[in-house]
Image (cartoon, rainbow, N blue to C red):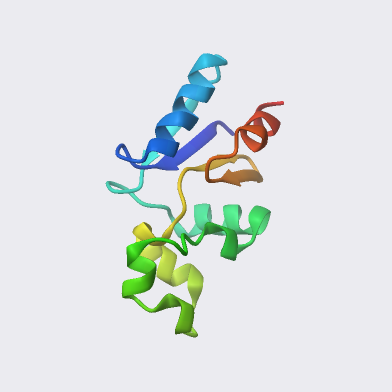
Amino acid sequence: MALQVFGTRKCQDTKKAERFFKERGVKFQFIDLAEKGMSPGELASVAAALGIDALVDTGSSRYAERGMAHLDCDLAAELIAAWRLLRTPIIRNGRRAAVGFAPDAWAALIE
């Protein structure tokens, strides 16, 4: 499976991840969450590697607006419905994944 970078064009950490892989000559597929989003299967794969809680951007305004800290809900369904709740970038390589600005974790994904 090819390396996938999930993020948005406006996200600075996503741009850093793209630059990281380009500088190392690693080919990757960029998926713009604002245009396409993550499929339930992709989300499940990343959640299996990292845990669903690692994917939630608890510092986002969307998280606060929706009152996510106080809701008892299906978190995976919420993340599929509202991609702005996701921490970015999400890097996936097969069954392994990394989330957020984590150059050491990114390097481990391409070893």
